[in-house]
Structures are given as C-alpha cells and as structure tokens.
Length: 77
View 1 (cartoon, one colour):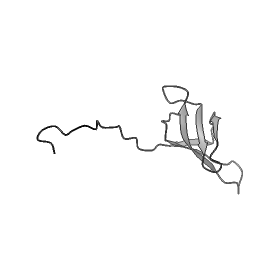
View 2: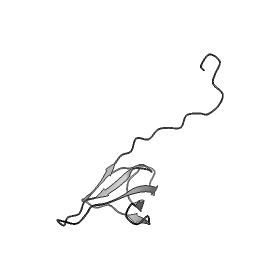
View 3: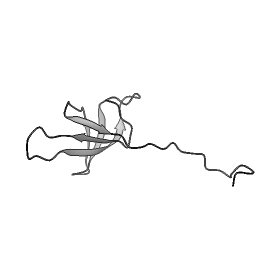
View 4: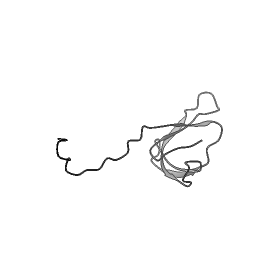
C-alpha cells in the first residue's frame, strides 16, 4: 500500500450494517508512501496515526505538479 498526501484512505467495515470510514491522508511517515499515515477523518475532522489493515484501501487522487508561475516566455502567451 502506497499513498500520497491528499489521497483518501477508506476502511471497509467487517460488520454488516456498520458504515465504512474514510479520511484524507494529511501526513506520511515514509518517503515511499508506505504506512503509517496521518489521517483526517471525514466524520470527526480529527487527525490520527493509522496503520491500515487488510480492510483498508487507498483512493488515489490525481496529483497535479505545480507549474512555475512567472511571466510567459516570449511567443507563448
């Protein structure tokens, strides 16, 4: 499991009738994107350290790299 900051962590409930839990990954502890993660939960807005189990998966959000913001080069307006 590998994630980026901004991805969504979803934990499915093993119990029938219990809602799944999801949150935004707001912090990584390893440069390669492996767990654990700091997650801001959507149901409580609290941040906690999470070691995802087999009932968890990552919803990858498209990450757009920042482009330089300066004057346009001549001929590229």
